[in-house]
Image 1 (cartoon, rainbow, N blue to C red):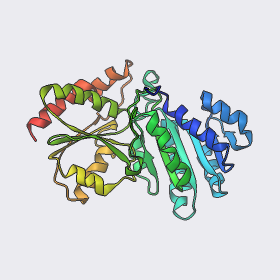
Image 2 (image 1 turned 120 degrees about the horizontal axis):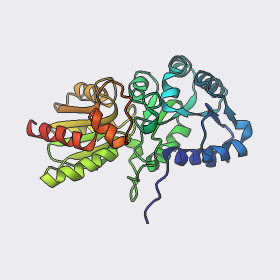
Image 3 (image 1 turned 120 degrees about the vertical axis):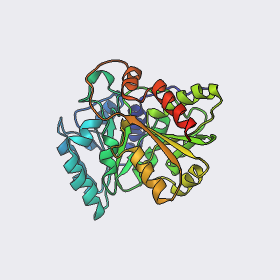
Image 4 (image 1 turned 45 degrees about the vertical axis):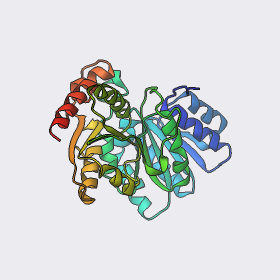
Length: 319
C-alpha cells in the first residue's frame, strides 16, 4: 500500500503534537506562521505555545531563554526569515551559548530553495545551507520527503544542541515508500553506480532520480546518495562508498560555490585524501525576478533535469 504524500512540515508538526501529549518539556514558538497541525498545538497546549509575531530576532532569543530553563524548543518560521533576518541572534544565543550551556533548540524553516516559487527571491531561500554550515555546534538537516522529515524527529527531541531543519514548502512525492531512510548514517545510499556517484540534498534528490531514469537509457549507471544531515553523518561509511568512484556530482538547490553541499564535500574528500574528480551543480549565483514553474526556473539557473543531464554527460566523457 502506497503512502500518501504530505507536506514535510505537517508530518513533522504531527510528531511534535503527539509528543507534547506525553512530554511537558516541549515548547513551541512561532513567528506568526501557521498550518492546520499547528492549530491543534495552539489549541491543546496553549501554555506551551507562543506566537511572537513577525519578529524572528525575538523568536530566537525567547527560544534560547526557554531552552536554558530546560525546555525542548521548536521554533517555526519561513526559511529565509528564520535564518537571515535573525542571523546574529542565532550566532550569539544559540551557536555560541550552546558551547557552554546545554540547550535543545530546533529551528524549523519552511520554504527551502524555490519551493515558494511564485513569491520571488525575497521568499525563496538559496543561502541557508551556507549560513548554517558556517556556525559551530549546529546540525543542518535537509530531508527529501515527509518520511525523512518525521524520521528526524527522534534525534531532534533527544539530542541537545541547536539544529536547523530545512523543509520544502510543497507536497513532494514519497521517496521512502517501502523502506526507511538510514537516519543514523545521516545519508541514504539509494543505489550503486559505475564510475560516477551523485550526492543530492532536499528537493534535488527528486531531480536526481529523474536524471538517473533518463541517463540510464544511454546505458550509464550512476550511484545516488540522499544527504539529509550535512553536519553529523557517518564519515567512515561515506568515505568507503566514495572510494569506489572516480567522479562525484553534487546537486543542491542553493548557490553553487558558496559554501553549501559542494564545499562540504570538497573539504570532506580533501581531508580524507579521497582522490575523486568533482562536478558541482547548484544555482548560478545571482537573483532572478522571473516567475514560472519550479522546473522552468531550475532550467534557467542550471539545476533543471535537462541542464543536469547535459552537464553529467559531458562530465562522464571526461572522467
